[in-house]
Image (cartoon, rainbow, N blue to C red; front, top):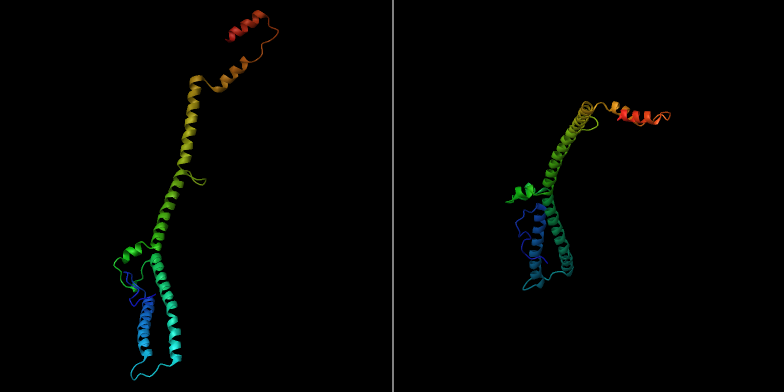
Length: 194
């Protein structure tokens, strides 16, 4: 049920459409009380035709539906404020800038800007790491590891000799001894190798 007090008792700017509907509902309530007094009649007042009373009752029966439209309009306005902030024509609200900053669209804009920054940072990281089309830090690290392997192999060759020479010496060790050698010659060949 609607009272004769305005619906906007909280501090929110109201759109003109909602104000018009609210004013109409208030005027309708004032007219109802006047019409009820007129309907009762009195000294020297003509009787109200029954047809007029029925039409008024039908019209007043639509009041609940109009109040639902008003509530829906206010709900839509609140959703719009949440999405984009208050409209300038709704009047100046004390914290209008704060409402705009906390609106969904402002938050989406912040996310878009942040995602742009994140995308730029990812592109920079990909550029540094490298990709198939361009060298990056990863390719440089791979080149350094390859250079270290080459240097390690050269140091090993300088220290212990080339690996090919060592392999050929080891291979001759495993060649079977000539079976025609006698015991003394065989022992001498093994001792000379050692």
